[in-house]
Length: 231
Image (cartoon, rainbow, N blue to C red; front, side, top):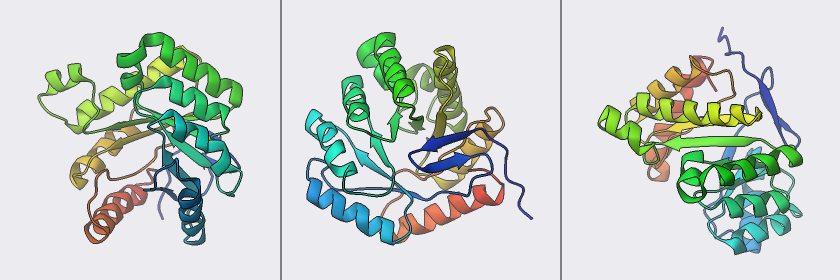
């Protein structure tokens, strides 16, 4: 029998992640988030297919402002994916996002520690978690110099450093991901990460490819880790 790794538990809307909660399925829209009708239609289709959480891209102020209108018309929790601009994270929180996905290093690069602190403060006040998302293309440059290229070890060290940063700000509603497009690297990264933190892990293969190859890669990578009790 599979022995699931023990983790902290966080709440995303009405869904629990980690601890003894069931494994949760999340997907991401490929619509323009500013197109509320198209985004809502895709979310509803995903929900019918069994999706329990959904993530949308928030690259602009208009996309962030659409979060509230989208959320009002769906039933599953909504996650806002922020890349560089902390102000978009603040707007997404104000609009009612149920979770924020950021790479704190990108926020630090653009806005410094003050930007990270404001995002953490907004999420704490809204009582929503933050997913620290690191992938092969967003590893801290200093660690790339240290390891020579995007290794699982570099991704994990990068993610753990951001976890410690949030902990120093007394924020612990954290989910973590360390995605690679290469399945063996993805599996190794999550196994290494699971040894170092007790937060719930969001599993995924980034840039997995077409629906056919992507399904195979995701099934192998995610399945192997779930068999390990990770994720």
